[in-house]
Image 1: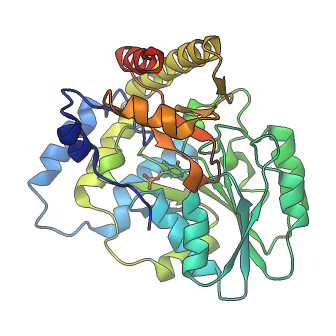
Image 2: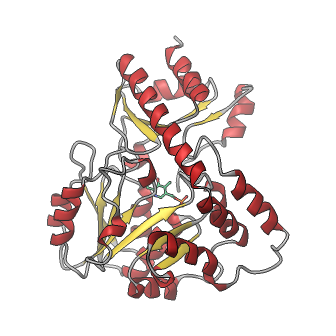
Length: 346
Ligand SMILES: *Cc1c(COP(=O)(O)O)cnc(C)c1O
């Protein structure tokens, strides 16, 4: 089980903290769109009803936005449900899936929970090593999981690297491109997985409302893939896996692109600010295309504990395959200042 330890509220009570600052889970520091909150409140009055039609309204809105058909979309209770659903749909014992050693642990968890093998290919400079992942494919490989941008390292697979990789992956291996953080990457550089779906029908693109849309507590993610893959996933999915309120919130959040753009811009500014400030203190930070930064330290435990006592919650990344890493979610300016103050305290 994921060792989350004591809850943040419990810790705060124990330490007698007045204020806690959550920088541990890559939530959106600027919160959800007020329009989404309103829509969720309105939907609450209808919660005696099951959510009808497999999220048809939201799938239709997403389909229009991304210029695909609604049958190319499946909704999940967060995109993490879909990570699991994909493993349950495509893997049997003895088969394998490939991912990296320094990445989101839920790929590994989903794969091993169906008694399949998870091949964790070492990262190269803390980034997915696609040529080596390609070379690890064998006759039992069914799935590949790639987080782009990657959590916790913040690295991004470049467009030429992704394109070279996709042409070399056999068509019977399903490539999952988890793009939870894509909105925070530079759009001129980022290789948007949706652009490759027509050419490579073995791709599944995962997206979520938990990050830039600020709806992590609502639990809503989705996958976009060819209709055949979506049909396969729907055979294994339980009915009513997403909630009426989550769908209403997501639908409204999609309409508020001004809020999204504002969050992207604030994140970019604060990510740069934090990077500069940490580097000026001699702390090594990896370049990040996400809403978080990974610090590489020789004293993770010491720094983590010291910062925790000031009420700032960070994520040590041993569970993500980076034992010397401490991940910080980009916060609002005053939160980042409070974190830096904690770093500076003796
Ligand atoms: C946060 C995150 C997600 C999103 O998970 P949800 O279940 O949609 O909240 C997916 N993939 C990665 C790599 C993440 O870090």
